[in-house]
Image (cartoon, rainbow, N blue to C red; front, side, top):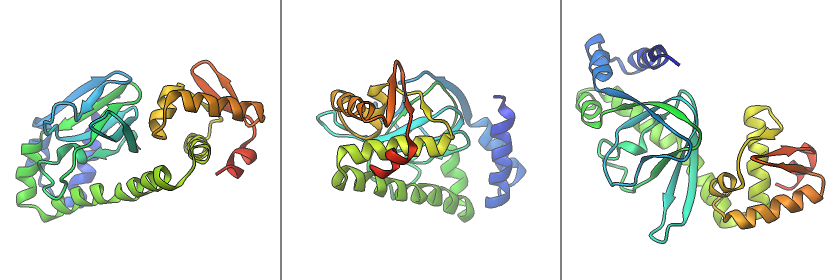
Length: 223
């Protein structure tokens, strides 16, 4: 995908936040394009303020990590999304650290936090945009927390598989057991056992590197 998609999104940002042409050019000059491979960390391992991440293509996973290394997936971001939590130095109200990994091969643009913060000082519309992007994700964060705290693993797994089908319209889910486990905050071995159980019940078929949903109604009934 060419730079034009990112530039188009900046034009949309200009309209909603009343940025000037010079402001947009300033953001372009202070953006870098980077490619990450599946599983590579984008933000959160070194404690630095990466900046605003724009997903040009691919999928990224945003998660919390405990001191013991346990991960809790908060949400995933897709093509056209912004990640604001990777710029906590700009959003002073964000006081916790998240990690961001590429879940597929990704092409992203990263807007340097100092440049974005400089424009935000004099533009309340840009500040509101950044806060709205961050706040709107908290509904997904709360859903993730609700699942982890109150939903049994079988229901979490069924909900995840069904949500993937609903999102893509495809009954074939190309994910490893490890990827699925990370997304529902469980262990790979446990997920493998649950997938085998669902396969015995005729709900899914487990294949190398993926899962095929055979009975959508049964899967939905498990949620």
